[in-house]
Length: 92
Image 1 (cartoon, rainbow, N blue to C red):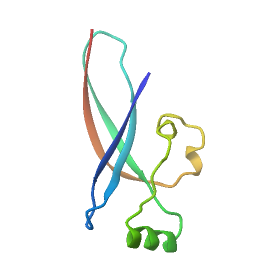
Image 2 (image 1 turned 90 degrees about the vertical axis):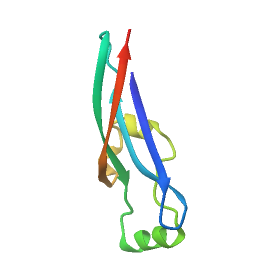
Image 3 (image 1 turned 45 degrees about the vertical axis):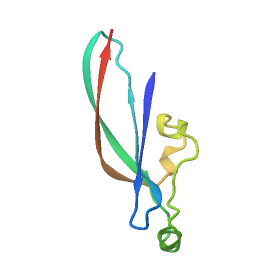
């Protein structure tokens, strides 16, 4: 099993935009586990699309969270690294 993380925040204009996506496998062994998730955001492919998304406040985002967890189709998606999230699991 995997856990998918979607982080949202406000931009300069007060719009709720995606700040990052990430996924990590949930550990099976009992105990406390800490995982660091590398976050990424999708990017527009052309300068016109970048300007239009900035101007309208509608940035690219995934409609299906399964895209983040699966590897299929990700090689054609343009993304940019956007920091890290640390998550802690307590497995019984």
